[in-house]
Image 1 (cartoon, rainbow, N blue to C red):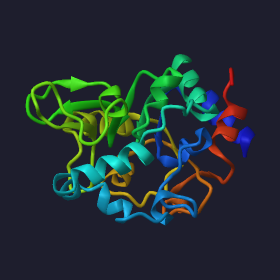
Image 2: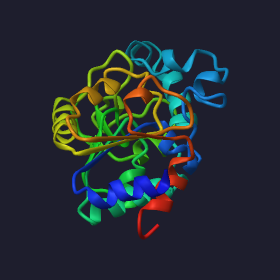
Image 3: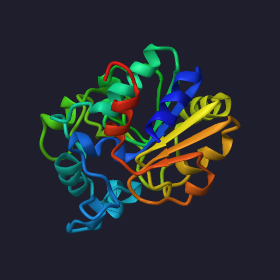
Length: 239
């Protein structure tokens, strides 16, 4: 399988990678739905409730307690998967990364064209004056973070009940539509609307790298269950 994947990558000049939380688990960031994921841990409120727009608005202090504790992991470093994808972009083969992750690790590894469907913890903005703030506005404060103007500083992440950014969606759809190879990695494909982006693919080859079975397996030309970093690190030069 590795040799076949290597040949597909070597022969392609228009690859798009579509990834989820499983891409970052090898960097020490927990996913959501695995046995050890956030959804299987016990909190005062279920994580899927805490990470909703309505909870943010009605229980803002509780939201930030959870957000600082579980959603920010600045000690995490890019793993072999992130580095391999950045190398493929430098080689002119990978045209874009479309990610559901908010950790910023693709950019840390050197990737330039990254469509962050669910936003990024690295960006934050004031809900009152719309001034942007970096991550320290959250990490170096306690309680509800406030802007100089007095407004609440909100992470630029897409919470449940919120819509995706139009420009990000447009860029991601365009990249997937024009790709000849789509590599899907580290995602259960259970989160919509993000998972629905795959229907725009018109290319020749679909590669699926995921530890567990997904509903999309039957559509893939190659399915590999090994860790993504291990797979991409083995087949991409420079890793």
